[in-house]
Image (cartoon, rainbow, N blue to C red; front, side, top):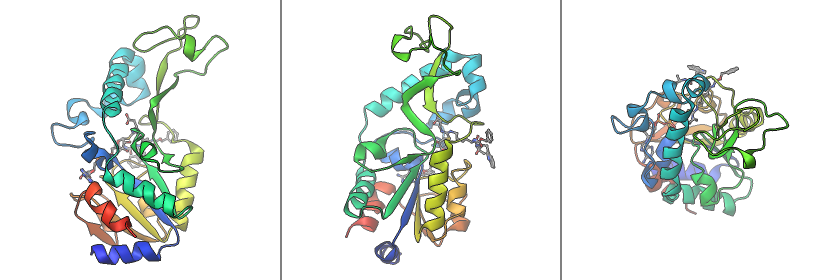
Amino acid sequence: MNEQVRAWVRAARHIAVLTGAGMSAESGVPTFRDAQTGLWAQFDPQQLATEDAFRANPSRVWEWYAFRREMIAKVEPNAGHRALAAFAQRHAGRLTLFTQNVDGLHQRAGSPGVLALHGNIAEDKWLDAPKKCCNASAAVAGSPPYCVRCGNMLRPDVVWFGEMLPVDILAAAEDAARECDLMLVVGTSGVVYPAAGLARTAAGKVVIVNPEPTDLDDAADAVLRGRAAQLLPILLEE
Ligand code: BV8
């Protein structure tokens, strides 16, 4: 099967790639659904990754993101991240990468023009529309930091459940899905929408790379039961 997919990669004029938490698993970032050990196993995502949860308990949610930021800062992109970056650099304009991951590892691996569907955990933004007094660099240190004049709080610049994805980034990903000859769907359980929906709108062949069954397997032309850092270098090497 790998040979078949390698032939599809060679023949594809435009490749779209959708990645999820499994892409970063071999870098040491726990996935969201890892049984019992996974981040979500300790915390209910609805309790933490929502605006309501943040307003109800800002420091608890802020601390959770601080915990994840520290962990992500200690890890490195893996061979899968690097294979995607190298392919995109060798074949300018032939690969469009959109990710659900907020860890920035694709960007750190050197992938150009990554479409971060769910934002970037390393960035902050104001919870409420900033007023003239809201200056992030002058924010009072705290958990979370806040504006001394109006109390506005900083929050991680990620997309929480119930929040819209960045319109321009989602539109670019939808365009790439509609124009692709091949879509690689790597390391995602395919349960969070609208990201998972991109695999269902792919014009080209859909290839899933995942050691476990996913909610998108029915949409696939090929399913490769393996791990991202093992399979992507094989699928993308010249
Ligand atoms: C919205 C950022 C609307 C924050 C995240 C349609 C149907 C049902 C529900 C909905 C729907 N449309 C909308 C919804 C609601 C909701 C949703 O999808 N809920 C789900 C839970 C049912 N969607 C939303 O709320 C979205 N917003 O719809 O707004 C709207 C409309 C108008 C006006 C206002 C609003 C926003 C969704 C984004 C939420 N933010 N992250 C943060 O990170 O803190 S989601 C977060 O969880 C991740 O970004 C990711 O998307 C998701 C986790 O999924 P995966 O990445 O797939 O990870 P998972 O652990 O599940 O799976 C890992 C996989 O890797 C496994 O399959 C495993 O086998 C595999 N694996 C493991 N090791 C490896 C591997 N694979 C390869 N190699 C390995 N080594």
